[in-house]
Figure: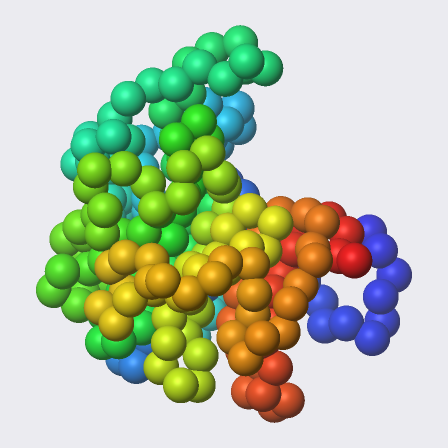
Length: 215
């Protein structure tokens, strides 16, 4: 146990094995939580999709079940074998939940395939979710997807080592803007894996959370 008196005590949210947790608070006042599930070692090679929980107060949690299954996909259903892997893979890693433009979005990646985006077609957190690009991942062969909306309303897809691409007005396709650049021209040179993105309302700054080292 680390001695960190300046930090509040750690509180367990729920009794559920999970990596890469992601949470958002929606206009309905509920907190929504997702992450890589399936338990070790299954989540590395073969979980079944994306699960979701909600809470009114970060203390009481309710499972909404599996809101999207790999079997609902197209390209996602195919197993892949990576050179360094002992077994074929068909698993969802690091899903993130976001509420943007009146609906819920799930950014996610599948190792060996790439990173992509799901949209709740009816605006409900439990879905149903539709793939914004069913013919293939938004970004092939890249992992750790995220999503954020800037103050000007623009929506940005983020992945891997902090690469960004502006989405079109409906946030269903990548736009024509350059990649690898923050809005308003601020360039970044991260060296690590993207673990989330957003805006600090206190300072008006864009935040990019990385696992690794940033130059």
